[in-house]
Length: 177
Image (cartoon, rainbow, N blue to C red; front, side):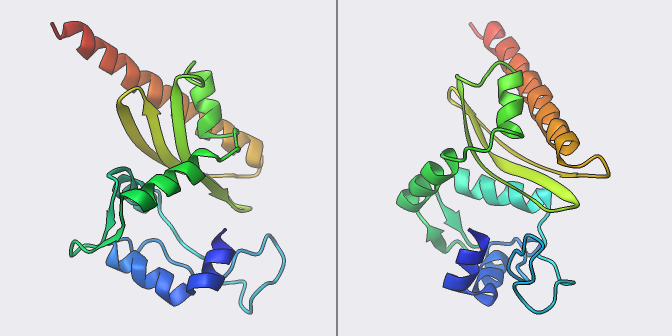
């Protein structure tokens, strides 16, 4: 998907848009290679931070994606379509696994984008439980043990955080007359 977007829109336009959104920590330097040389310099890397991805999903969750100066670049129809695409993610190894371990696989909806490379693994998205929405973005190193360990860490953080948030909400609901 990233490579298709680079081909269709161009890295410069993508980087300019991220800057306009106030997200300069997300930058595109080259196509993704999966270990195969697809562009000249493999030493330059695309960058993103967990904080920047969380902010991007927060903007998306609001129903509008707008620039720092208020210009809307994706409106309700666009975010609805994006939600459909993100909700169709079939990767059940990270956040989705955490929701299952938390006992919420049938009551929660996840709209997420997974990613990673040889040194890191990440998952970012919106978790919807009833009328509550949580934006979560987790980046974790894969380390020497590889992807299964990183997937487990990501799932565990998701599971524990959602359990905490839902327990806290249940306590609040119990106190409300």
